[in-house]
Image 1 (spheres, helix red, strand yellow):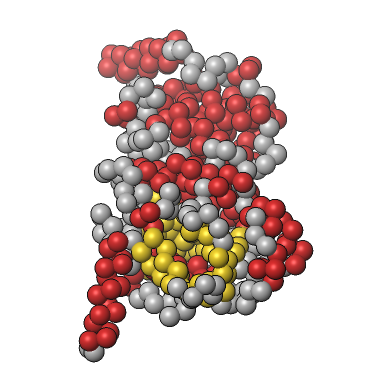
Image 2 (cartoon, rainbow, N blue to C red; image 1 turned 135 degrees about the vertical axis):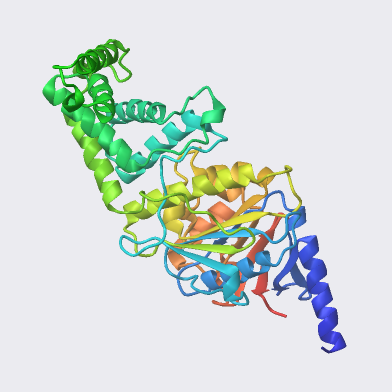
Length: 431
């Protein structure tokens, strides 16, 4: 290797350890290098905006490649790409063995999650609320009363599986699956239709699984004892407090609507698996391109929530100098939908995750696709050419001169903001 290449390699390794990488060269005032110094950023979030065909996704892939070479306090960072367009099958400069592909699809996919998973950090209260929120995203016509009913049913199901909201040692139990919840709802529906109490039916079914009347030969003393014991078990079950209350309080129409929604979720195959285990220190590409928008939004919400919790659990120390993890979402409309609520996982990642070592790269096509809250929480931002109809929006939201946007060369230039208070023109990734 030549001395020049050795010097270049050593400089690159030094920059990786310091948390710096080159974004290109400024095209104003002397053409100095544009260095992104992550260690000095107020957070690890980077936003990019540009219309289709101007090189935004390519720029994101180059940034991901640079991030993947950083040397953090836990080694190489773990990166999550939520690929909704199929743009990240490969990444420039990243060897295939460093990429872990997970395919979400309705058939023959290897990506599925259990929405009833309990995170030990949040416990049962958070798990129940999170699940109800996921169902609301999947079915945005779910009403307040249906949501309240669902919350009661899910709480009861967790209790049935040995979870105690006040005992953290139970939060690592094997969680129920969506099929278990559907069965619970169907039992409730049967209770309402028959007029029998659901808790009594469940208890009697449990007894029948252990003891059967066929084994009770009443012609023998032993058989009579078994028969009497069976009767006592049933009586004891009926005398127990009713966890789900009397059947009279449940509304059949609401229960059947809940069942319909849950069955649709289950039949998609996307919510009937165990939790995906990311490969630490690699680039995990979650391919969502084959999903319909409703399912895509639901899965994105789930994945962002799990990634945030994953970062919390693995944060051995707080406020690291460099990011240990990074999540990438390059789709403006989905970013907008995913950040509508203040406490949505995407907003929490943008505003709270820096202390856990987690950052986000967000790609959008329009200023309308990014909320003011998300924009304020991006320590860096790159504006590439946008459609002329967006000029006024970019000017008012980002305070840049329209002529500077017009002057940008597609697929090679952008206006870059890096904690220094102003946007400057940069020839991206120029030597």
